[in-house]
Image (cartoon, rainbow over all chains, first blue to last red):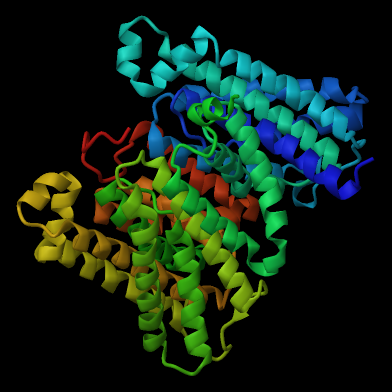
Length: 274
Length: 290
């Protein structure tokens, strides 16, 4: 048996990994989102209300939360098509803060006081979502679809000229990414068995982006490594107590300077193969 | 009552204007969103308030805060921007986020997470104009903002530094060929951006009579919305958008409740990005920003 401390860290890693996959997906079509915590919040609240008030089985509720988040993602994706780069980042940041405010004002789910009453999931249940999703994304990365997505990221005009439907690819990526964030939210809600709007603030969104950027945005193993690093590094830095978050900020800057493509990339994977 | 809210909104707007100019100096010239500006704003508040609590005059406190945040602004530039100048723009965005984390942790450790309170008798005189009461602190906040914006406009229009900045904004390489000392001017932009945010931090301390480590996220980041609504290429646009969003926010709180304030401010930002990406007063088609 593993201690509850270790299983807590492992569960947080799994949830952070699924959340990071959502950013990984939108980055694959060249979009940066600083608001994916909003989709996580949507998934968390929908799934929680379904299990607590309607007695829906927990995994079905999480799936339903993911579907609702995904639809919201497509809705948000339409206007987002007009924006790129930093401007999309700022717009999604605003969307994230607006969603947080929305749940703050929503009395039906407790507003600022938060929402509880969920049944706790096991650690295994979290990784039963995370591992298949990892395999799925790894398989997707070998497909033509992924090539098409990267083509849109590298040069949208050229991608359109060779007949790729850039609009559909971007909308699809945004929607699926939102659904993934929704899954992460549902799992988060049923692991911590308490949710409040401030759990899905800007910090959460930036954490997802950091996991991908630190770990590496070229293969799905990057976000996995990044998520683990994000959850474990502050623990490993516990010996410097109050300053550990600062050290973490410094580490982030250092990695961006030394290895801007992230720690894990395809060359590293090749080099590690026997 | 409504008129009283207007005064409060204009004070908040003055603070927004200065922080937004801090964001837009770097964004408009170098195309980089320096997220650390929001935390420099918070640090400026702490430095200023600490000086005030040590019995220095308010003017010294403002100058001290500006100096500290200007130096830190250059540190951010040297470490988080310069080495990543040719990387995609999200790289410096994330490295400045790293600095935000560092600054926020440092402030929490140095000053604690409880609010730092201003001496209650400082600038507490109030003037009555009809039914409206204006605090001395509010007047000072608005006056500093107006003076600084005017000074910045003159600086951009009539000095070699201003010419240099605008030349780099157009084209860095050509500017260098024409003899603009690009590294120096870039550092100047970061220093100035930090100083503006620092002064705004002292202002928010005077306005709220307190400062917390979270004021950067709660107030400072909203200045991004002000910058977008005003337009990144135009000082006067920001001067219009700052008071506009400040008043709008205060009115929303007064009429609809505090929970809706962020929705109005960020909602207006998203609307601007979608229908008028160049901002209220920006030039149409000015650079490929969208």
